[in-house]
Length: 248
Image (cartoon, rainbow, N blue to C red):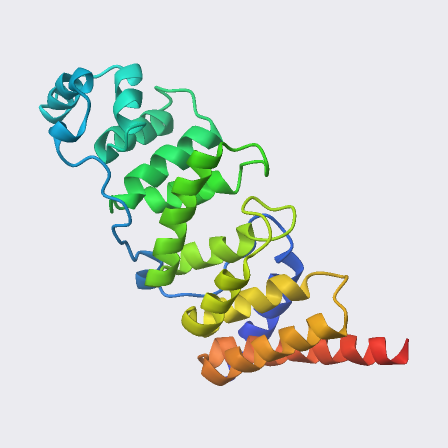
């Protein structure tokens, strides 16, 4: 137990140092929580959901026929998760030029339909996107899929949700509704992640530090040993910064 506490203190320092980065070091989580998969958007599940011109393409794809990348794009852009999966695999293999935008979007279409392994591809690509450059409809698809998995308990999605929200970040400033849902439904681990992201800011005033203190108290109250230990370590930093503000 002592060794776990020592590891948690060491990790807390490293996590706080990396919290301001685009892709922060992940908080500890069990492998099952990182593999949680849910269906957020089934997309196209029947050929008759498509326009007449695209129906022969989907029938050919489902039948196992060789498909051009252009035809797969036509189907994937309509929300066909199988076509999207094939495009992701084509990018992985080098058969199709990879862009972070394409990878994020098509992996989101596939992950949204519950295709395992695609969430990780989507998240990795999201970290590579430049804020303010992604088409709104593509970003919306990724957000819906990411949030759906995060609220279902997927810890990798939870880490990304917190990391990608914020001033100058891909999703922009975190909404009050998202912050409130993290506090009420996200669990101690996600609350700790939110506290670390805020604490990494150098411009926090007394009110901001008091808010972080509340987050850390919540995480310490509800978390396991590692979360409690990290929350206690970071709470000491909050108190030190509050004391420094009082002196100044």
